[in-house]
Image 1 (cartoon, rainbow, N blue to C red):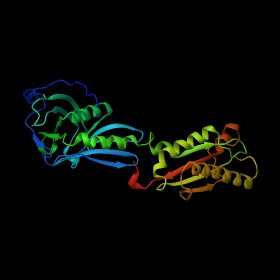
Image 2 (tube, rainbow, N blue to C red):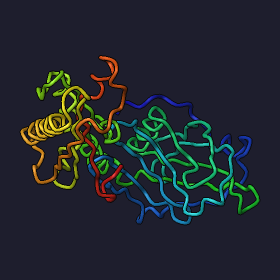
Image 3 (cartoon, rainbow, N blue to C red):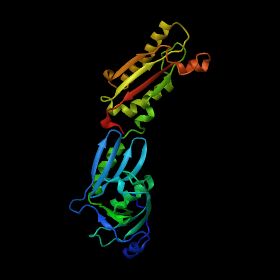
Image 4 (cartoon, one colour):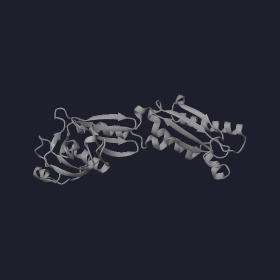
Length: 294
């Protein structure tokens, strides 16, 4: 990544900045520091444990922006406030000057620090360049006295490559954006038009990688025009048409159930053409195992 230039800051200035009184240091020893990548179908995490505090992590998720998060093992120690971040050279790098990154908001709870994509990228660039992240934040358990967390660059560049490979395989959309998926039909028809196929293709693009773990239900519906038995069969045929298309696109048939509702579950009144058009539909809903949910 191309690194944005940050303002140099001397070690002396760091010590006299407001809110930067002497702080207890937390961080892994150099020989124990490192980064690990956790890969799941809908999110990727690049993390480093911060002893006696919790976890620092970068996260990419399907349909969500890149993030940096700092998780606290003891959330009650952190109240709303402000922290300060410096990007410092590790002890063995004498060719670098410290740089002041800026202030960050501290939130109460299990994730006191959350940074958006732009600031997360700046931290990642600094780590890739070999700098430590040093974050000072008040600790309620110490009466507001700050603690200084150190996040090490050791092993970051190598782990970043694996993280980026994981992120590159994520779907463009989150499962929630296509669950449920609805398609509509012309009067008396089971034909899937271009709009319907496009919506079903979006669904397949999101859950295709976990199709053997997903459970899908395809619910067919009809308007009230015609007899009840005829609409029962028509709603079933619509559900079967959608199921056949999903199977054709690679989803396993055994994971897809069909349900015919006939005209019994309208979402709009049947006394207008617009309402009847809304009722001529198929709704596809799915469940994912908890272990792979984003």
